Structure formats: structure tokens, C-alpha cells
Image 1 (tube, helix red, strand yellow):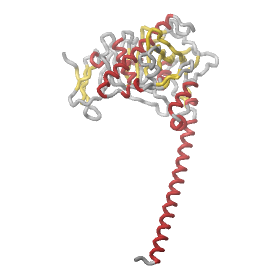
Image 2 (cartoon, one colour):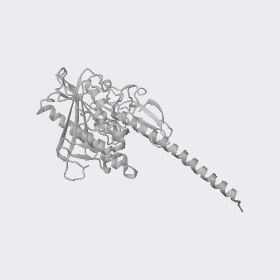
Image 3 (cartoon, helix red, strand yellow):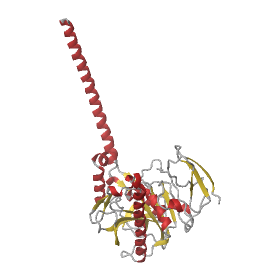
Image 4 (spheres, one colour):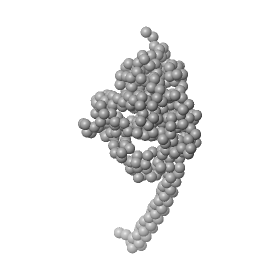
Length: 392
């Protein structure tokens, strides 16, 4: 039996504890709210600050052209409609004529595309966690002529990774163009995340065309189907470039593309597509697989006897203090050859592509048309490899 003073003491103690916890909770809530507001303010300032991409390192100014190409002879097998023609939005960076009076700097992204990208990202990402795309500035000029220093320039096809848009690699494209390359990238409807055509049409990737969702027993069939589509897109682009080099209504590129010197490179699945294309098409004279596991027949057969091209997996690198988009990789197509006659180098300095596997045995990986072979134990993390010479 409790006495009245015990009940009173317990009641007062309970009230004291409740008040203390409420006070502490209020202080924590206020502190957390203030910190959240400060964080959002910092993110907003960072989001709103202007950003200039890394300055190209070559001697040429850079021009950029964006256009849409339609393949009237082929149906797009990846489109929801069975009758839709294959269409691509093509981005071309090229060595531009310098000395023009007040050259017009092109927007990092065209306004309609910028609006769709921000809409697809959502308010939190587009307003706080990424830069304001209207404040990002590259170094490409609009409607510039092709540089007159050379009669023609070698062509490089650039493929983005998975569903990434090609503009994410603008830094790399501008830098290559500044060294005298015509760099051609493109976005494919229903395979690239967001594609906006010059006429205002917007097309987004559909799940069936997402290579990252290929899994299970159907993985090989799914990946190979997409790989065939990606390599066919590259072939179509080269066909159109050959036509453009013969006749260009604007007069900009007619006779200015050296189609005897064509390179293809890509990032991630785009790198796998580059390797497979160079296996299939004799027009490819050089190529790089940037951090992409190989797929398709190139794994079994190599690149092919016609083009002894080294494919490597460079690591991403951002220059200290230099802002960049995804395109800042330590890649230099010029280092692959003089006159685009590719030669192999020591494999210990130029690692071959590494595909992670779970096999407990030691598997050899051989670079096409070289005597070098690399043996890797894939069960270890990271995989350990040794090099040797392939013997007959």
C-alpha cells in the first residue's frame, strides 16, 4: 500500500522526466532542423554556382553540331512500335576555324534537353544534389566552320555507357576535337535514358532495353541482342558520315572527313560495343574499351586479323582542381599509333580487359593477335594476375 507522499513523489518525478525528455527532444529537433537548413543552403549555393569544364589541351578551337538522322531502310527493333524507323540524335565535335569575330559559345545542353533531364532526375537531385545545368559551360562554339589547317581530319566514334547520354562525355570529346579529331557521339531512343529530338519529341529508355536488367538464364541472349543493336547503330552512323563526306548541304563536312582513319571507343557497355564493332567491321582502325567487360563473339575470336588494336581499361581520372563531367579519362587515341597503324606494347604496362568471373580455376585471357596472355584467379578480391607468352 502506497502512502500519499509516495504517490505525489512519483507523479512529480514522472512529470520531471517527461519535461526533461521533451526539452531534450525539442533541442535535438531544433538543432537537426538548423543543420538541415544549413546543408540545403550550402547545396543550393553549390548548385547555383557557375561551372566551367576543363579547358581542352589541343591547339584547335572546338565546334559542335547537333542533328537527327533517320535510317529509312531499317526498322528500329527496340522501339515499342513495329513500324518505327531507326532514329538517332547525333552530336559532332570537330576542330573549328579560329579567328572568327565573336564566336557564339554553344550551351552545354540545349534548353529542351536540359528541361527533360532535370524533370527525369526529380526535384531533390536536380535542385540540390547536382549542378544547375544552365550554369555549366563548355568550350564548343556554334555554327563554326571546320579548321582549314588540314584538308581532312580522322573520325572517332564515341559510345556512352549503358543508358548514359553522350553529353556526359563532353570534356573528353572537346579535348579530342582540340587535337584534330572529328568526334561523333549519339543517343538512341528507347536505349538512352532521355533523348530529345530537335523537333521537340521526347523518348525515354524502356526496361526491355536496359542492359543492366539482363540476368538469369536469358542474360546472354538479352545482352547479345542489345549488343547487336549497338553495333548496328555505329555502322549506320559511319554510313551517314561517308555520305556526309561526299555531299553536305551546308558545305561544312564535305571532303573534310578522313574515312580511312576511323577509331571507335566507348565506356562500359559502350566499350564492349566498340570491341565487337571492330571485330565485325573493317572500317575500324583503332579502338578503346574504357572499363567495359567484353561480350559477344569478340571474347572467343579476338578483334580480328585485319586490325591489331589494343583494347585497354583506363581508370577514371579527374584533374586536381578541375571540374569535369564523366568524360575525363586518361585516354589518348594519338598514343595508339602514328598514322593509325596500331602496335602492341608490353602488356604489363597496358593491361588487357578484365572480366570478373566466379570460376575457381585459373583462366587465360589473350589479347587478339598478340603472343601475350594473362592468367587471372578471379575468386580473389581483387583478382591476381600473371603474364606469360602464349606457346603453340
